[in-house]
Length: 201
Length: 322
Image 1: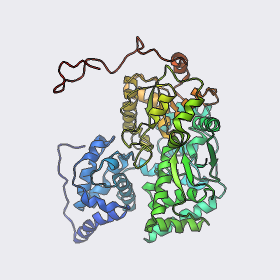
Image 2: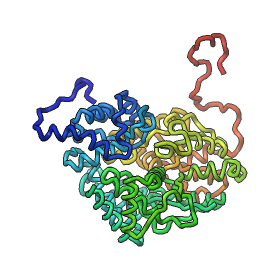
Image 3: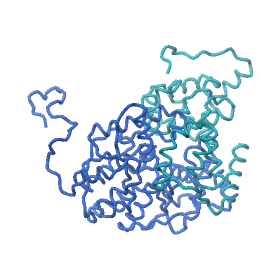
Image 4: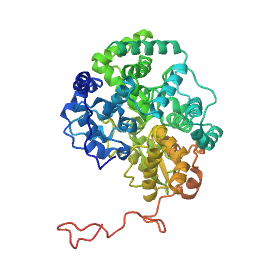
């Protein structure tokens, strides 16, 4: 975190941007059931203090929440903070105002991808590879996922992980072929319908 | 009592030792775990970062597939447990999002009757349904001599309102104690192993793992016992990368709580999947596991809590420590 700079610079806005920024807090809060609890956040900072990856975030969670309230849409959605959230729910159980913080972090990930403002590469890429595997087989398949993901995106890391991978393979901890569910068509139909409903609402 | 069993993807391979030991221990303890037919992946964290409705719909298919005569779902994986539980709560609440999930399920010819299921973690079922008394009555070779760090990880006990305290859980401590092990004071027992963080930042992932390994080592633990496949995988498979990254020398075996139970029940270590760890547990088991009741104070081993070093408190002057 940048301790030198304790403010966020707000660039000049067009009228349209200004309208978007006033809508932004509501957009975030409505993305999560119970998300309007964010209105009650008084920036006590317990969330950031409880966060195991807090020091690596460009904004602490409570600062990010203040930025949401201030309508700084682009800055919020470009932040790495949600991507460094490990979803351990420490902040959520400790928040004195019962803000569903972890769920809001997930929502910010979704919004940053939707608005094309996501500057993180690895997180979204990995998620896409993971979902592609699930939608092909109905189950996750570690070996296939790891080789495809790392081979195409991070070949060097694959090399570093290879010795452990090999040992896991020998010990029977990596399957060579994926397990597939029988009713994969049914699963795909459910997901198709769910995505259509999300798009419509 | 019969439970609908949701194993989760990792039990097929990366956590096959968990699967092996669950099968054997459940049989011995009379736990009837009936696998949900044709279950699918819970989506881990990926779907929640992509589409909330699709994330819940993916999980909901599993709840809809539970046999009609069962009312409890149990998962040994903490991430699956949290996902199943949150979707069950969403569907039971019957609000807009839950109704949309029902709508999506119908597209696959399925439906879920709100309120029919409760979702539980395997640790909860073992400790609270089977019960410690029953388990102790079956113990043939107590874990005397072993100093263990009970590691819950985050999702076994959070986001809360579950079976144990979200910050200071005790169920695994009590279980391991009743098996005869010496449970060390592991203050990071409910902290996060990083989950999939190694994908976003290996640096952050390694430092999270290092904290855990450091804490367990400092407390004199011989091994870590966990109730989550992701925690086991991260602590075990990345341990030598952590060592290389920080120049440390951790050699901390990480096993599943069902393996610990199985050992105390006298089941074969190999059948329980001991030996599948990357950091082998067998040297520690051979060296420390005496099978005999411990002497009150063992000589030669570092005791972390020193006597006579308690901070002075008002009114406590002159009171002898301990």
